[in-house]
Length: 127
Image (cartoon, rainbow, N blue to C red; front, side, top):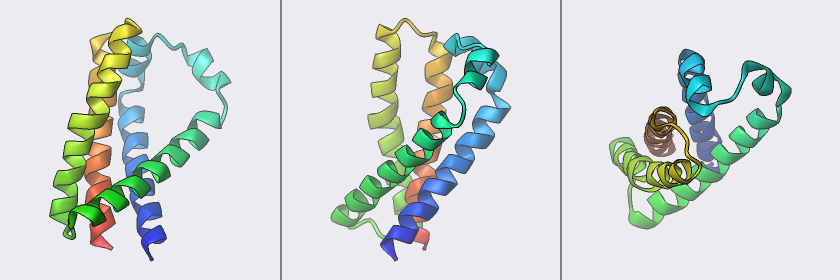
């Protein structure tokens, strides 16, 4: 049953990311410096890596929430928000700063990390 929770949480966060990046595709392309041609040339591999990454994050979050005794959807959401806002986004911001990326890229990707982890935490404890 825990594996199904992890898969559901990963799919939910991936789904949010799909909607988020579709809505912000043009600002993301501008901030990242990636062209539409480069993006198309990537083929399906970014999506494969994305879903595998979501399963890994959801699996670790399941472990951390269980170890911390977080058992409610609200508690999972708050923990996920903290993970996204205080672990993932600062690390991404540091990497982007050294890579000389635009702050808008950190904002767009950071919101995805925060909201995605919040959704994951809630879903992990809702099932």
